[in-house]
Image (cartoon, rainbow over all chains, first blue to last red):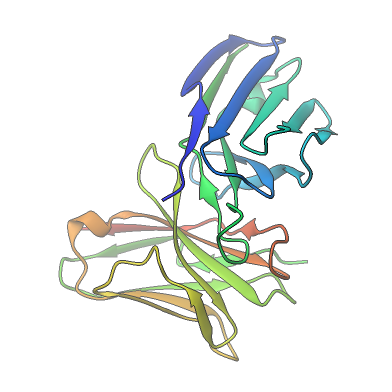
Amino acid sequence: GQQLNQSPQSMFIQEGEDVSMNCTSSSIFNTWLWYKQDPGEGPVLLIALYKAGELTSNGRLTAQFGTTRKDSFLNISASIPSDVGIYFCAGPPWETSGSRLTFGEGTQLTVNP
Amino acid sequence: NAGVMQNPRHLVRRRGQEARLRCSPVKGHSHVYWYRQLPEEGLKFMVYLQKENIIDESGMPKERFSAEFPKEGPSILRIQQVVRGDSAAYFCASSQATNTEAFFGQGTRLTVV
């Protein structure tokens, strides 16, 4: 099946630093979604991207839908301790039904105060 | 404005017992998705349902697993004769329509002892 390669697997940063993570795929995606998951909780949608080349911000978060439709990145600026968690990229590959999502393996973010 | 509600949050079953996981979608959402998450992994798609119909069950194991989304009431994911390998977090998501944003519940953590 389709796979999303997400990197890095983990990041350890100091509070105030900027963070960047990305996702690549061998398949074309119509939509790219970025989720955050806190321990013991479900994923929470951060940003949704619907068009190739689209750049969208949500507070300190910025995400872009790659022009080839096979990649996306997420940036977090001026990180704070509550940014700790696992970040997942996800999307419905164009040939799948409905909103069925393929997820990356996640980026574990640790922020040291 | 309730989100996706899953219950129970935690479920312990002995090997060979049955597990029933319930999911009430966001009010007005008719599309439901079930995902499974093993520790330190991303979410893996299991099944996609609309009211009274299974649309895509390509991620569902062929044996012991079944899902339904009746006209009235929550969606149910049923695992018969559980084995230790079924231990995981099971997440439900719902969306209003095809290819619209999916919102996740908090998950049910199944432990098979």
